[in-house]
Image (tube, rainbow, N blue to C red):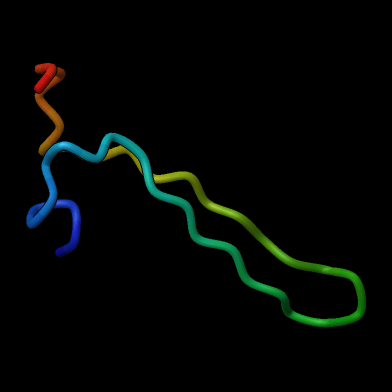
Length: 38
């Protein structure tokens, strides 16, 4: 939803901790990004 509201943003990141030294990270690419400069 936030990518659709902000098409000028190309990437996003999500990180989470699940305890005992483990976790995960995801890098998202915005499908609404059109590559145009402002």
